[in-house]
Length: 576
DNA sequence: GTCCTGACTTAGCAACGGCGTC
DNA sequence: GACGCCGTTGCTAAGTCAGGAC
Image (cartoon, rainbow, N blue to C red):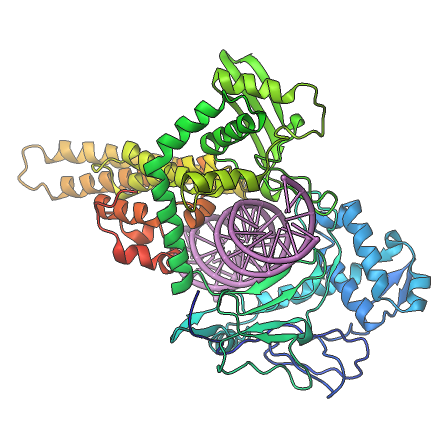
């Protein structure tokens, strides 16, 4: 995949368990692995045991916890005002794992989480957060942190110095699975150097493990893009240290992704014709595949791999839909053949939609649901492997995911064409862009929790609009008066001044009203996900050029870096 | 064909920090 | 200069998909 990888440097934040540690060192930078004794364990950087006046209480009595148990208690204490800690599953998992870190005596004493009082630990945490907020820039070690990024945040790939995306090892803490995750609250353990695999070129400088320690393995695999990896203990999955999105390697992959989606554009009509035909197939499997493809294409559903029951939250995608996730209505709200979808998708985000479908799709769905009950798969003859195998036979590189990219990008392009108006000012053009972006976000079901301060900030903005309206009325009156007074006079200066004031007021009012509309429409919709992952950046770059809108109005610095390849190559006549 | 795993992309949340307003 | 708002950034969970083993 790449020829010549040199890992310039790599470091990990946080260190090892401290079970037998007998010495505490305070670290200025809080980053490098630090080792206390040649054969001893690591200690968390900067970790200080609880001061004497901060106590943990069990059943109303103060208890001095051993160091590992104390650290895990702090993880919980930091979260006590979060909804997580009210959930039974979270509490049970936490308590079970916490007890594993306790000494025998502690385990015999601490039997019930409800009798634990983390109040003082939590107060200490809040105090620390507040204290940090009040620090100056220098005290916050901004420069020191930058030095760490300079030293450890880069690698050399094909002779180019490239930024690493996540060069810090994930610190220990409590697992925050989304939704009703059965493993939420479990202890995410501290990663040791002995857990970490380093991947770098043969002959390159191998990063030094901390003194007295060794890496799990050093390998030289140029077929993969990761620089280091480890296995996390909660789900047993691999975690990787990889390059930043602005690297050449990631940029090339991004470009390839959009090129495959563009290629789909050339054969999508034939593919659609084929799955329409397959809806009539005698083979049940083929019909199911056709209906699934219809959903993936029309509704931009995800493929929906099977998941191991009890290991993760109960979420589904297209192929894993169950009969309880759809309701069929012969007629609904004056429309015929309506399918009502209601299920939890990725990240436990609810997908709720009422969609009129063709008669044939509707008839097939009725057939698939015959003699089935809650819990049964809707598409029992289909899985993502067979679906993708079929798709790749229709077009090289075609998978279910490509439809999402294709439909997202083509929707943006069409919407921009429909909504765009060269005569508008920049604020109005941006509203049109955001509306096009929003159409995509709705299609892909990219939601967000409404900001906590939403109602208040809308009220503030409305108050500003009202006050500006009053100013405008006043300015108009003053203009009228000035015109009256200037009648017959050759001096038009006052009138011109008042005219400009009216104009300025109108512009400001329009800008605020546009902002209010945009914000309201965006309340529960996340635009960033589609912008980052689904919309071919060349469409946006070309639009900016054609509409004479500065690119930084739609792409922030991070996005401009990520899409540098598109910014460099795109002309105004680009068509997706 | 199915199951499992590794590698990679996609996703939302929360902390941070810059900037406008008073 | 203080304050609050909101866009940006970092973090890491949760998906997709290919390939290998059986």
